[in-house]
Image (tube, rainbow, N blue to C red; front, side):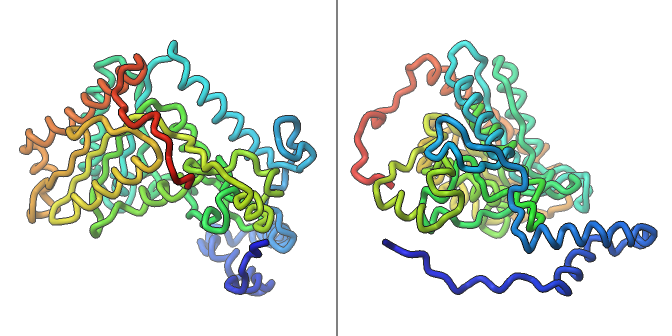
Length: 356
Protein backbone atom coordinates (compact mmCIF):
# COMPACT_ATOMS: atom_id res chain seq x y z
CA UNK A 1 0.00 0.00 0.00
CA UNK A 2 1.29 3.46 -0.94
CA UNK A 3 0.85 5.48 2.24
CA UNK A 4 0.34 9.26 2.26
CA UNK A 5 3.45 11.21 3.19
CA UNK A 6 2.88 13.73 5.97
CA UNK A 7 4.69 16.40 7.96
CA UNK A 8 4.06 19.66 6.11
CA UNK A 9 0.97 21.12 7.75
CA UNK A 10 1.43 23.35 10.83
CA UNK A 11 -0.42 22.48 14.06
CA UNK A 12 -3.99 23.78 14.52
CA UNK A 13 -4.45 27.29 15.85
CA UNK A 14 -4.48 27.82 19.59
CA UNK A 15 -7.37 29.62 21.24
CA UNK A 16 -5.56 32.98 21.45
CA UNK A 17 -4.51 32.97 17.78
CA UNK A 18 -8.01 31.92 16.74
CA UNK A 19 -9.41 34.89 18.68
CA UNK A 20 -7.10 37.32 16.89
CA UNK A 21 -8.01 35.97 13.45
CA UNK A 22 -11.73 35.92 14.19
CA UNK A 23 -11.75 39.51 15.41
CA UNK A 24 -9.99 40.83 12.30
CA UNK A 25 -13.30 40.70 10.47
CA UNK A 26 -14.91 43.03 13.01
CA UNK A 27 -12.47 45.95 13.45
CA UNK A 28 -15.08 48.46 12.29
CA UNK A 29 -16.22 50.49 15.36
CA UNK A 30 -19.79 49.80 14.24
CA UNK A 31 -19.37 46.34 15.82
CA UNK A 32 -18.45 47.74 19.25
CA UNK A 33 -22.00 47.63 20.56
CA UNK A 34 -22.36 43.91 19.74
CA UNK A 35 -19.08 42.61 21.14
CA UNK A 36 -20.86 40.42 23.68
CA UNK A 37 -22.86 38.74 20.92
CA UNK A 38 -19.73 38.39 18.78
CA UNK A 39 -17.95 36.69 21.67
CA UNK A 40 -20.70 34.08 21.79
CA UNK A 41 -20.46 33.56 18.02
CA UNK A 42 -16.70 33.28 18.33
CA UNK A 43 -16.98 30.55 20.96
CA UNK A 44 -19.28 28.53 18.69
CA UNK A 45 -16.91 29.06 15.75
CA UNK A 46 -13.98 27.92 17.93
CA UNK A 47 -15.72 24.70 18.90
CA UNK A 48 -16.66 24.05 15.27
CA UNK A 49 -13.01 24.59 14.31
CA UNK A 50 -11.49 22.25 16.91
CA UNK A 51 -14.17 19.61 16.32
CA UNK A 52 -13.72 19.73 12.55
CA UNK A 53 -17.26 20.62 11.50
CA UNK A 54 -16.51 20.56 7.79
CA UNK A 55 -19.96 19.35 6.74
CA UNK A 56 -22.21 19.80 9.79
CA UNK A 57 -25.42 18.69 8.04
CA UNK A 58 -25.36 15.19 6.55
CA UNK A 59 -27.65 12.37 5.52
CA UNK A 60 -27.13 8.78 4.46
CA UNK A 61 -25.79 8.56 0.92
CA UNK A 62 -28.48 6.06 -0.07
CA UNK A 63 -28.79 3.86 -3.18
CA UNK A 64 -26.37 4.33 -6.06
CA UNK A 65 -23.33 4.97 -3.88
CA UNK A 66 -20.56 2.56 -3.02
CA UNK A 67 -21.38 2.98 0.68
CA UNK A 68 -25.11 3.78 1.04
CA UNK A 69 -24.70 4.23 4.80
CA UNK A 70 -21.99 6.88 4.53
CA UNK A 71 -22.96 10.22 6.11
CA UNK A 72 -22.78 12.47 3.05
CA UNK A 73 -22.93 16.27 3.07
CA UNK A 74 -26.42 17.41 2.09
CA UNK A 75 -24.87 20.40 0.29
CA UNK A 76 -22.63 18.18 -1.84
CA UNK A 77 -25.43 15.70 -2.50
CA UNK A 78 -27.77 18.45 -3.72
CA UNK A 79 -25.06 19.85 -5.99
CA UNK A 80 -24.28 16.42 -7.44
CA UNK A 81 -27.95 15.76 -8.13
CA UNK A 82 -28.31 19.11 -9.84
CA UNK A 83 -25.33 18.44 -12.13
CA UNK A 84 -26.77 15.07 -13.12
CA UNK A 85 -30.08 16.73 -14.03
CA UNK A 86 -28.37 19.47 -16.04
CA UNK A 87 -26.24 16.92 -17.87
CA UNK A 88 -29.37 15.11 -19.01
CA UNK A 89 -30.92 18.38 -20.17
CA UNK A 90 -27.76 19.30 -22.04
CA UNK A 91 -27.87 16.01 -23.95
CA UNK A 92 -31.57 16.39 -24.79
CA UNK A 93 -31.76 17.50 -28.44
CA UNK A 94 -35.13 19.17 -27.75
CA UNK A 95 -33.59 21.77 -25.43
CA UNK A 96 -32.30 25.11 -26.77
CA UNK A 97 -28.60 25.46 -27.55
CA UNK A 98 -26.72 27.16 -24.74
CA UNK A 99 -23.35 28.95 -24.67
CA UNK A 100 -21.48 29.99 -21.56
CA UNK A 101 -19.65 33.29 -21.94
CA UNK A 102 -16.91 33.83 -19.35
CA UNK A 103 -15.55 37.31 -18.75
CA UNK A 104 -12.14 36.65 -17.20
CA UNK A 105 -11.16 40.21 -16.30
CA UNK A 106 -10.98 41.16 -12.61
CA UNK A 107 -12.04 44.76 -13.33
CA UNK A 108 -15.47 46.34 -13.08
CA UNK A 109 -16.88 49.71 -12.10
CA UNK A 110 -18.38 48.42 -8.84
CA UNK A 111 -15.13 48.59 -6.90
CA UNK A 112 -11.69 50.27 -6.83
CA UNK A 113 -11.10 50.29 -10.63
CA UNK A 114 -14.13 52.56 -11.15
CA UNK A 115 -14.54 51.53 -14.79
CA UNK A 116 -15.78 48.58 -16.79
CA UNK A 117 -13.24 46.31 -18.47
CA UNK A 118 -12.60 46.06 -22.19
CA UNK A 119 -13.12 42.32 -21.76
CA UNK A 120 -16.67 43.01 -20.60
CA UNK A 121 -17.35 45.02 -23.73
CA UNK A 122 -16.00 42.21 -25.92
CA UNK A 123 -18.14 39.73 -24.00
CA UNK A 124 -21.26 41.77 -24.71
CA UNK A 125 -20.37 41.81 -28.42
CA UNK A 126 -20.19 38.01 -28.43
CA UNK A 127 -23.45 37.83 -26.49
CA UNK A 128 -25.25 39.92 -29.11
CA UNK A 129 -24.14 37.60 -31.92
CA UNK A 130 -25.25 34.46 -30.11
CA UNK A 131 -28.61 35.84 -29.04
CA UNK A 132 -29.29 37.01 -32.60
CA UNK A 133 -28.98 33.34 -33.61
CA UNK A 134 -31.52 32.23 -30.99
CA UNK A 135 -28.86 30.68 -28.76
CA UNK A 136 -29.32 30.98 -25.02
CA UNK A 137 -26.44 32.75 -23.29
CA UNK A 138 -25.27 32.23 -19.73
CA UNK A 139 -22.91 35.08 -18.80
CA UNK A 140 -20.34 34.43 -16.07
CA UNK A 141 -18.61 37.64 -14.99
CA UNK A 142 -15.68 36.60 -12.80
CA UNK A 143 -15.01 40.22 -11.83
CA UNK A 144 -17.85 39.88 -9.33
CA UNK A 145 -15.26 38.32 -7.03
CA UNK A 146 -13.87 41.82 -6.44
CA UNK A 147 -17.18 43.61 -5.91
CA UNK A 148 -19.81 41.22 -4.52
CA UNK A 149 -20.15 40.80 -0.77
CA UNK A 150 -18.47 37.66 0.61
CA UNK A 151 -18.32 35.92 -2.79
CA UNK A 152 -15.42 33.50 -3.17
CA UNK A 153 -13.76 30.96 -5.39
CA UNK A 154 -11.63 29.20 -2.83
CA UNK A 155 -8.31 27.77 -4.10
CA UNK A 156 -7.92 24.18 -5.22
CA UNK A 157 -6.36 22.03 -2.47
CA UNK A 158 -4.61 19.67 -4.90
CA UNK A 159 -6.42 16.46 -3.87
CA UNK A 160 -5.91 15.03 -7.36
CA UNK A 161 -2.14 14.88 -6.81
CA UNK A 162 -2.62 12.65 -3.75
CA UNK A 163 -4.91 10.36 -5.75
CA UNK A 164 -7.38 11.20 -8.49
CA UNK A 165 -10.36 9.54 -6.75
CA UNK A 166 -9.79 11.86 -3.78
CA UNK A 167 -10.81 14.73 -6.07
CA UNK A 168 -14.60 14.50 -6.09
CA UNK A 169 -16.95 15.66 -8.85
CA UNK A 170 -18.28 18.15 -7.95
CA UNK A 171 -15.60 19.41 -5.54
CA UNK A 172 -16.26 18.37 -1.94
CA UNK A 173 -13.42 20.41 -0.38
CA UNK A 174 -15.83 23.30 0.08
CA UNK A 175 -17.74 24.50 1.92
CA UNK A 176 -15.68 23.73 5.02
CA UNK A 177 -17.75 25.32 7.75
CA UNK A 178 -15.33 24.51 10.55
CA UNK A 179 -12.60 26.54 8.82
CA UNK A 180 -14.98 29.27 7.64
CA UNK A 181 -14.33 28.44 4.01
CA UNK A 182 -17.87 29.17 2.85
CA UNK A 183 -19.82 31.05 0.19
CA UNK A 184 -17.93 29.20 -2.52
CA UNK A 185 -19.14 30.25 -5.97
CA UNK A 186 -17.92 27.10 -7.72
CA UNK A 187 -21.04 25.05 -6.98
CA UNK A 188 -22.98 27.46 -9.22
CA UNK A 189 -20.18 27.69 -11.78
CA UNK A 190 -20.08 23.89 -12.20
CA UNK A 191 -23.77 24.07 -13.12
CA UNK A 192 -23.07 26.68 -15.80
CA UNK A 193 -20.36 24.52 -17.42
CA UNK A 194 -22.48 21.37 -17.37
CA UNK A 195 -25.55 23.09 -18.84
CA UNK A 196 -23.58 24.61 -21.73
CA UNK A 197 -23.11 23.17 -25.22
CA UNK A 198 -20.22 25.57 -25.75
CA UNK A 199 -17.97 27.89 -23.77
CA UNK A 200 -16.25 31.10 -24.86
CA UNK A 201 -13.59 32.47 -22.54
CA UNK A 202 -12.67 36.12 -22.99
CA UNK A 203 -9.73 37.37 -20.95
CA UNK A 204 -7.05 40.02 -20.71
CA UNK A 205 -3.43 39.17 -19.95
CA UNK A 206 -2.12 40.04 -16.48
CA UNK A 207 1.67 39.72 -16.19
CA UNK A 208 1.92 37.09 -18.97
CA UNK A 209 -0.81 35.01 -17.29
CA UNK A 210 -4.56 34.81 -16.91
CA UNK A 211 -6.09 37.03 -14.20
CA UNK A 212 -6.26 35.37 -10.79
CA UNK A 213 -10.07 35.26 -10.86
CA UNK A 214 -9.93 33.11 -14.00
CA UNK A 215 -7.11 30.91 -12.74
CA UNK A 216 -9.03 30.18 -9.53
CA UNK A 217 -11.92 28.81 -11.60
CA UNK A 218 -9.59 26.84 -13.88
CA UNK A 219 -7.88 25.11 -10.95
CA UNK A 220 -11.21 24.20 -9.37
CA UNK A 221 -12.30 22.55 -12.63
CA UNK A 222 -9.70 19.81 -12.18
CA UNK A 223 -12.46 17.64 -10.70
CA UNK A 224 -14.20 17.78 -14.09
CA UNK A 225 -11.23 15.96 -15.62
CA UNK A 226 -10.95 12.60 -13.88
CA UNK A 227 -12.89 13.47 -10.73
CA UNK A 228 -14.70 10.91 -8.60
CA UNK A 229 -18.53 11.23 -8.56
CA UNK A 230 -18.82 9.02 -5.46
CA UNK A 231 -17.17 10.37 -2.27
CA UNK A 232 -18.33 7.31 -0.34
CA UNK A 233 -15.89 5.16 -2.33
CA UNK A 234 -13.01 7.00 -0.65
CA UNK A 235 -14.63 7.37 2.77
CA UNK A 236 -14.84 11.09 2.11
CA UNK A 237 -11.31 12.49 2.21
CA UNK A 238 -9.47 9.33 3.25
CA UNK A 239 -6.18 9.54 1.36
CA UNK A 240 -5.24 5.89 1.86
CA UNK A 241 -8.55 4.64 0.49
CA UNK A 242 -8.28 7.01 -2.49
CA UNK A 243 -4.79 5.76 -3.34
CA UNK A 244 -6.04 2.17 -3.21
CA UNK A 245 -8.94 3.00 -5.53
CA UNK A 246 -6.65 4.67 -8.08
CA UNK A 247 -4.04 1.93 -8.02
CA UNK A 248 -6.75 -0.71 -8.49
CA UNK A 249 -7.61 1.00 -11.79
CA UNK A 250 -9.15 4.39 -12.44
CA UNK A 251 -10.67 5.56 -15.73
CA UNK A 252 -10.25 9.33 -15.24
CA UNK A 253 -13.71 10.33 -16.54
CA UNK A 254 -13.92 13.60 -18.48
CA UNK A 255 -17.16 15.09 -17.24
CA UNK A 256 -17.22 18.08 -19.63
CA UNK A 257 -15.91 16.45 -22.81
CA UNK A 258 -17.68 17.03 -26.11
CA UNK A 259 -18.53 20.69 -25.64
CA UNK A 260 -17.36 23.32 -28.13
CA UNK A 261 -15.10 26.22 -27.19
CA UNK A 262 -13.84 29.58 -28.39
CA UNK A 263 -11.23 31.97 -26.97
CA UNK A 264 -10.57 35.70 -27.02
CA UNK A 265 -7.30 36.81 -25.40
CA UNK A 266 -6.24 40.45 -25.48
CA UNK A 267 -3.36 42.46 -24.09
CA UNK A 268 -1.49 45.72 -24.49
CA UNK A 269 2.21 44.78 -24.46
CA UNK A 270 2.99 41.04 -24.36
CA UNK A 271 1.81 37.55 -23.45
CA UNK A 272 -1.27 37.12 -25.60
CA UNK A 273 -0.04 34.14 -27.62
CA UNK A 274 1.19 32.24 -24.58
CA UNK A 275 -2.07 32.69 -22.69
CA UNK A 276 -4.13 31.71 -25.73
CA UNK A 277 -2.05 28.57 -26.24
CA UNK A 278 -2.25 27.64 -22.55
CA UNK A 279 -6.03 28.01 -22.51
CA UNK A 280 -6.38 26.05 -25.75
CA UNK A 281 -4.20 23.23 -24.42
CA UNK A 282 -6.19 23.10 -21.18
CA UNK A 283 -9.56 22.96 -22.93
CA UNK A 284 -8.29 20.38 -25.43
CA UNK A 285 -7.04 18.23 -22.55
CA UNK A 286 -10.49 18.30 -20.93
CA UNK A 287 -11.99 16.99 -24.14
CA UNK A 288 -13.60 20.16 -25.44
CA UNK A 289 -13.63 20.83 -29.19
CA UNK A 290 -12.37 24.07 -30.70
CA UNK A 291 -14.59 25.83 -33.21
CA UNK A 292 -11.74 26.38 -35.66
CA UNK A 293 -8.71 28.63 -35.95
CA UNK A 294 -10.91 31.72 -36.21
CA UNK A 295 -12.40 30.94 -32.83
CA UNK A 296 -9.02 31.07 -31.05
CA UNK A 297 -8.18 34.76 -31.09
CA UNK A 298 -5.30 36.71 -29.54
CA UNK A 299 -4.94 40.43 -30.21
CA UNK A 300 -3.28 43.56 -28.87
CA UNK A 301 -5.58 46.48 -28.17
CA UNK A 302 -3.58 49.70 -27.96
CA UNK A 303 -0.07 48.30 -28.23
CA UNK A 304 2.11 50.23 -25.75
CA UNK A 305 -0.53 52.95 -25.48
CA UNK A 306 -1.86 54.44 -22.25
CA UNK A 307 -4.24 52.54 -20.00
CA UNK A 308 -6.21 55.72 -19.38
CA UNK A 309 -7.36 55.98 -23.00
CA UNK A 310 -7.68 52.27 -23.77
CA UNK A 311 -11.47 52.26 -24.12
CA UNK A 312 -11.24 54.93 -26.82
CA UNK A 313 -8.61 52.76 -28.51
CA UNK A 314 -11.06 49.85 -28.52
CA UNK A 315 -13.72 52.14 -29.97
CA UNK A 316 -11.45 52.79 -32.94
CA UNK A 317 -10.35 49.19 -33.41
CA UNK A 318 -13.26 48.05 -35.56
CA UNK A 319 -11.26 45.08 -36.85
CA UNK A 320 -10.83 43.48 -33.43
CA UNK A 321 -14.51 44.03 -32.71
CA UNK A 322 -15.35 42.16 -35.91
CA UNK A 323 -12.91 39.37 -35.00
CA UNK A 324 -14.54 38.89 -31.62
CA UNK A 325 -17.92 38.65 -33.27
CA UNK A 326 -16.46 36.11 -35.68
CA UNK A 327 -15.42 33.96 -32.71
CA UNK A 328 -19.04 33.95 -31.58
CA UNK A 329 -20.26 33.16 -35.11
CA UNK A 330 -17.83 30.23 -35.37
CA UNK A 331 -18.90 28.83 -32.01
CA UNK A 332 -22.57 29.20 -32.89
CA UNK A 333 -22.08 27.24 -36.14
CA UNK A 334 -20.03 24.57 -34.36
CA UNK A 335 -22.78 24.17 -31.76
CA UNK A 336 -25.36 23.73 -34.50
CA UNK A 337 -23.21 21.06 -36.16
CA UNK A 338 -22.52 19.38 -32.83
CA UNK A 339 -26.20 19.03 -32.06
CA UNK A 340 -26.99 17.84 -35.58
CA UNK A 341 -24.24 15.24 -35.29
CA UNK A 342 -22.33 16.66 -38.26
CA UNK A 343 -19.39 18.30 -36.44
CA UNK A 344 -16.20 16.72 -37.77
CA UNK A 345 -14.17 14.98 -35.05
CA UNK A 346 -11.73 12.69 -36.90
CA UNK A 347 -10.13 11.41 -33.69
CA UNK A 348 -13.39 10.82 -31.82
CA UNK A 349 -13.24 7.02 -31.83
CA UNK A 350 -9.51 6.56 -31.40
CA UNK A 351 -8.57 4.59 -28.34
CA UNK A 352 -6.23 6.35 -25.92
CA UNK A 353 -3.14 4.33 -24.94
CA UNK A 354 -2.81 6.25 -21.67
CA UNK A 355 -5.64 6.30 -19.15
CA UNK A 356 -4.67 9.51 -17.33
